[in-house]
Amino acid sequence: MRVLVLGSGVIGVTTAWYLNQAGHEVVVVDRQAGPALETSFANAGQVSPGYSAPWAAPSIPVKAMKWLLMRHAPLILRPRLDMAMIRWTIAMLRNCTHDRYALNKSRMVRLAEYSRDQLDQLRRETGVAYDGRQQGTLQLFRTEKQLADMHKDVDVLKAQGVPCAVLDRAGCIAAEPGLAASDVGFVGGLRLPHDETGDCFLFTNALARMAAERGVTFHQGVDILGLETVDGRVVGARTSRGPMTGDAVVVALGSHSPQMAASVGLKLPVYPVKGYSITAQIVDADRAPVSTVMDESYKVAITRLGDRIRVGGMAELSGYNNTLPALRRETLEHSVGSLFPGGGDLKGASYWSGLRPMTPDGTPVIGATKVPGLYLNTGHGTLGWTMACGSARVLADTIDGRSPEIDAHDLSLNRYGAWAGAFAPGFG
Image (cartoon, rainbow, N blue to C red):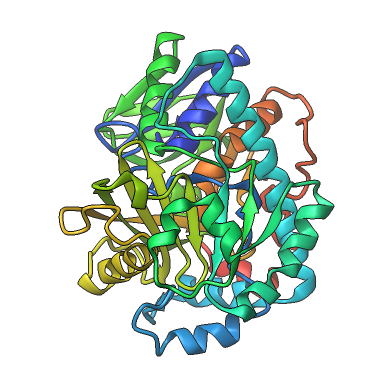
């Protein structure tokens, strides 16, 4: 079968890889000059199945009100006359219940754990290098309330069989010695020993090169104008280089997936949630992180990538824009500077923003659609790097007619029909 994959971020490239491994002819198309030049370019760097959780949590509505008054807020809302944003926000708030949080987190962890196992297997089979470290992650709590509130996450992790350990302040410093230089009064943390780190950009490009060597065709710098249909079936895409055909077409265009799906009348509950990162050279290894530290107060991940520190996070609802406000950089510098003072060259750090494709319930949309020939692999939010290999393997198995190795019935777009109701028509 000839499969056309739209998008060459980490989701598109891993999808192409697993489809190629299954014996399909694969063609990848992307508007960028090379792989991983948008959301996959400078993300936070952690592969964190244990930290997989939806933003839609019971505490979010109250916290969001408080965050509006914070200088270094983890969530930034920029209201717009945008019906897609309004309906997405309402749908997200509907998921802010204890029952839905537990359900959404459980399926996210299920997929993320599987994905980490697939990444481990891929690394062993190919030797792909990407400044990876398999040394766990640490969710750090600055307040006693944060420490007390984590029980709901621990319950889900234990139910899924995910190893974790609650640490006091001394235990956090033992896991991340660089924290000893901090004067922040953090009170404890949650250690996830099986989580990993790595540079998503390096990984995606290395895998793309290996995929090309195995026969995958990449068309970079090509605008994708819409999907082509014959008798109601998707048979390819219209592009700036003319039509490109496929027996199956996969939309893996991140935040731009809704516009592509809309060309065949399909509505996707995906909206761009903007994130920011800085990347600094390490100047004192003893004061730098060993792996990843998640600063719970600011929703910021501080990650060791070789001789660099990647600091990424925050969530901003502001539509499709990539502006770089000074205040967002200040928040990232405040988080890493307070926890790892003197570890990196913050003044010389590069500054970046990306648009994460987020669903209201946090879980990506993976699988076949009601439109014959059209498949989706999108909506991964902040966890595209964490869930990439597992999502791609699930989709490749689905296209190949095999049952995925994990339960994937609740990963497709079909789940939105059960509860989205009037909100669904506003997406896309």
